[in-house]
Image 1 (cartoon, rainbow, N blue to C red):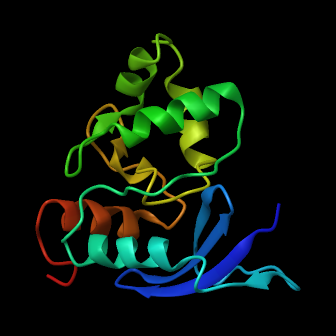
Image 2: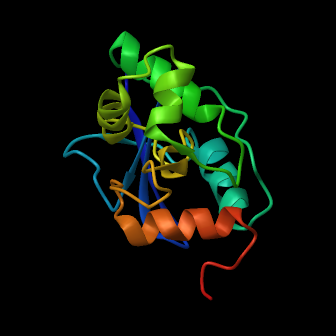
Length: 157
């Protein structure tokens, strides 16, 4: 299956969008298109348009297909993350309990770490047990910015 790439400028910086015929497969922070990869902005247009709407505060849910691959546990975590409402947060422990694995908070953290589709699979909405922001692939400033955006505040205040 051919991976199709494009770059997107956003309010949090450059994003690399990758998709297959089955849906959005990855969002990476920065430019990370492999050498010799297929560049196809038209194929990724629906993803970039909905992400632009999200960054403008006009979209709270995405309605395109996802094409992610992982272990059964990772996929279960990622599916649970999509259920976290816009503007809300959950702890790693709460996610583990929802999955029927109350002792698996660390494993939930590792699944978050391996999330291939940042922003759309909203691992930025997962916080530590005390409500503190914890690691994020794009860095804590970007995690904070996304949560600020979802609270209805400007990213630039």
